[in-house]
Amino acid sequence: MEFEGRDIISIRDFSLEEIRYILDSALRMEARMAEELCLLEGRILACLFFEPSTRTRLSFETAMKRLGGRVIGFSKAGVASVAKGENLTDTIKTVANYADVIVMRHPREGAARLAAEVSDVPVINAGDGSNQHPTQTLLDLYTIKKEKGRLDVTTAIVGDLKYGRTVHSLAHALAMFGAGLILVSPPGLEMPPEVLSDLRELGAEVTRSSLEEAVREAEVLYVTRIQKERFPDPEEYEKVKGAYKITPETLTKAREDLIVMHPLPRVDEISPEVDLTRHARYFQQVRNGIPVRMALLALVLGAE
Amino acid sequence: MERDIRVRKIKDGTVIDHITAGQALNVLKIIGFAEEFPKTTVTVAINVPSRKAGLKDIVKVEGRELRSEEVDKIALIAPKATINIIRDYRVVEKKKVSIPHKLEGVLKCANPNCITHFEPVKTVFMVERKDPIKLRCHYCERVMGEAEIVTQF
Ligand SMILES: Nc1ncnc2c1ncn2[C@@H]1O[C@H](COP(=O)(O)OP(=O)(O)OP(=O)(O)O)[C@@H](O)[C@H]1O
Ligand SMILES: [Mg+2]
Ligand SMILES: [Zn+2]
Image (tube, rainbow over all chains, first blue to last red; front, side):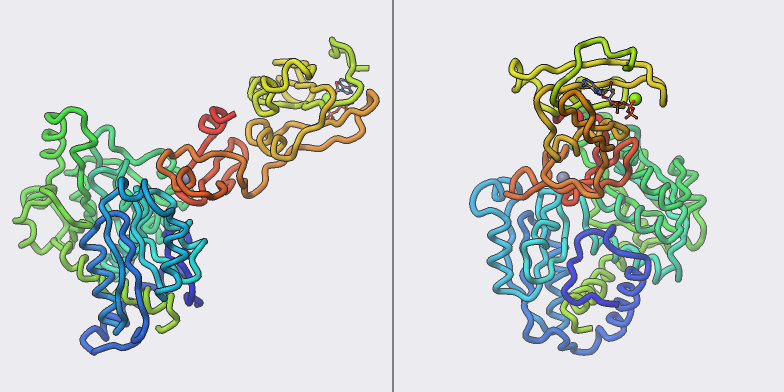
């Protein structure tokens, strides 16, 4: 399978086989993480964060450094900084002369695809507005595969299913692998109809349900943040937040092998006591970001 | 002669026939009727019973042929339309409109935060379904249907 020189922009660009290949490659990376690897010695990664995201940036930097490569880059403060100054196209064309690979986050949807088109070096999308964040999706799949041994698992996705970009791509990818999806969301934050019809076209079995029922049936409980900004009425927000909060009590009826995931950072949608239960996997999930990003960097640079 | 030609025949021009009933006014917007008025004579028939299927609309434009990007746009809202070129009162050419797999530079993205509104780049939409129309922005991946398309004309 050919990955050298390829961009990683959207989970929609990848076939089932390609996703499997990336996950296998990440597994091999993880096995070698204790060694001092020098697969990308002499290579430079440019991290262009037109919108700040400490965690994702640190994760990519760690991945590159663990492979023996070096990192340059910048982090800016949101849309205001994008509005003025040099256009994206020129920035990318410039940076492509300095670096061997670009990782980019941008507040506008479609920015990563455009960057990939003008760049001579591979571009990895670390989030383009509310659209895609494919490495998050891949590390989510990696976590599920590692924990469950398979991807056709019954997954309950909880929270803001309307605006949450992670959940749209995750649902898409899981549907490709034949997973059953249980959607749990407050009124007004349901999965958009075009995403739903996408999932059905992929042959996924999609149901809506209450949190209680979902917890009983699911093998994976994927929890996401419900943002305050989505609610015009603060009281309404407090009510909804309370109703979707995961506590050890919420999980009493869960299957023994249920795993709870969260893309982090969490606010208070999962109480800290859940961390101590056998269900919690969100910190493993964060850690899994490293081998997945290592694998992707090595693959697109032809060093795997 | 067809019995339902109620106005005088066109010498040279274009007849857009088999337009999805109700879409004639959008077709007028596409061909920029307002800008060309009053130089061009345009005849519009709405909800004409059609021998092939149900009702249809017809738009007849005198003295000019359509540009290919106009035909592409018409295809999006009236996928069964035919474009008849009239010369010297006769149909000299007839073609069915067709929706390409990919639309370049024809429409704007309905997502106001799409990068195509901020960078010097041509829009690109992939056609995921033809009838009813479903487009996906190549950049931001947002889906557009007929409602978002017609507001642009
Ligand atoms: N000179 C003209 N002026 C105005 N309208 C015309 C003229 N010639 C043809 N038309 C119209 O153009 C359309 C196409 O004409 P045509 O003679 O090909 O009809 P048709 O055989 O019914 O075609 P189709 O199979 O596409 O329905 C018809 O709606 C007809 O009324
Ligand atoms: Mg006819
Ligand atoms: Zn767009």
